Length: 291
Image 1: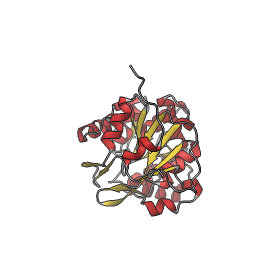
Image 2: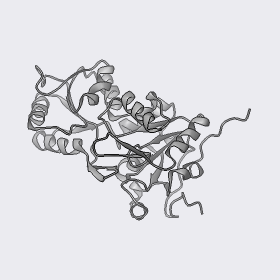
Image 3: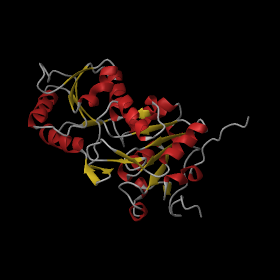
Image 4: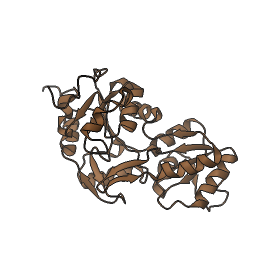
């Protein structure tokens, strides 16, 4: 039995894979808590390089929103990952696309400068707590904000009470780092905002189908022809299952082999990899044409 394939209780994978989507933290690398240093995981460079050699479309989809997509891609290249700017997708990429299509013109950003860059690139005006008329916006967007304080939360609440919609980069409580599980700031911030406002949130990161649809359009394939590779059953695997994609779990992040085996069907991968190197034997992807 192929060691990359999970137990017999797992259902067969859906349609043939034509493109791949990779989680970043816990799947391709481990960062430190400050997101300033990266440790590449075994097989990450080799697998991405082989996909490039075969001309198989792939993208990196992170729930990290601290950096603009191009800046994030540059940081990963400096660490050794073969990834182009256009292959790096963040929740802000999805938020910018969604807000633009929904006619959002001005957004209050709870996050670092990089959180709002994709929105500005899409022509959406961004403002921050403390700036003039900060609360007169169409949307509030919550992302990576380690220095968030009560004035930020109050400003967001005031904007929502005035009619702004609540957009959220990530609703994940933890992510994998070199130091172990690290708290997801936007999860805590949004918890406070929603406790006050009862506002529904529009999630733009994983496991939102907004994110999977955006990636599928960018890669030019249907969602059912994507393979989603990640370390979290509540994030990548749930998203893949909802979208009819192939779900691939790795054991290098927040979920080990025993935890994968205990997952209910909605959070169960079609394949569990003991190492990323097993990906190309577990999932059939196109090979380059012979000369």
